[in-house]
Every structure is written in structure tokens, then in C-alpha cells.
Length: 146
Image 1 (spheres, rainbow, N blue to C red):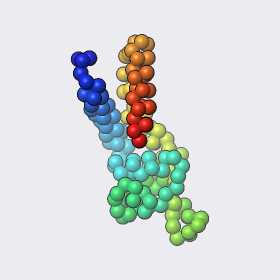
Image 2: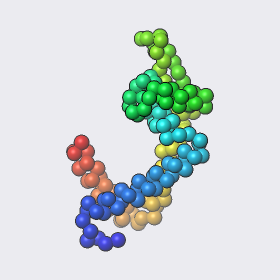
Image 3: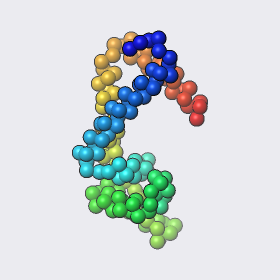
Image 4: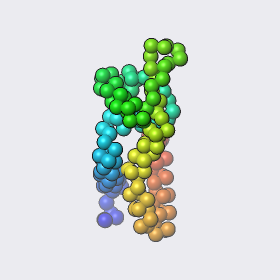
């Protein structure tokens, strides 16, 4: 690769490779689990231990309550999600991720990032240090932009 390219062009090329690999591996994971993108997205929303209702998730994902409800029904049947009564409003149901759901999300993260382990193993220690230092600088600069 030409090292005289502008940094922005190099970053765009890296982002393209990263997104392609990550997306392809994620798609393979979805195919092996039989879950849809929306279903996995719902699981990811619940991953951090927060309890959401159907309407909360629908608003976050920008899809209808009916679509979320249908996806959640399937996730409950598969044992990835539990519905619990909301202690402050008995009519409402709160969704929580089960241990099986947490394990599945961890597997999805590993499936999307496994190739990174292979990539980093192919670098020399000096190259790995140089890339690490550079990515730390980029990450810090990007966080300041937030």
C-alpha cells in the first residue's frame, strides 16, 4: 500500500475492509443461528442488563411495536429473552436477557471480531506496537469530537 496517501484516504480504506469483514462474519453468524438482524439487535439492546418494554425497543430501533412484539415472541420461545411484570405498572411487561441470550450475544461479538485476532497475530511485535499507538491516538481524537 502506498504510504504517501493522505491519512483520510487510508482510514477510509481501513474502514471499508473492517466493515466488510465484520459484516460478512456477522451475516454468517445470523445464518447459523437463524435469527434476523432485528432479533439480534433487540438482544444487543438488552445485553447491558437494562430492562426495556416493547415500545422502548421499538422507539430505539425505529420499527413498529407489532414488529418488535413478534420478534420478542420468537426470542422468548427460543429462551433468549424473558418477559417480566413491571413492578411499577403490572400491565406492562419488561424484557430481560436470559443467560442463554447473553451467551449468544457474546458469541456474536466473537464471530464479528475473530478475524482481528488472526490479523494481529500476523504482525510483528514492532508493527503491532506502532498500530496500537496510532489507533489510541485516533480513538482519543474521535472521542474528543463526540
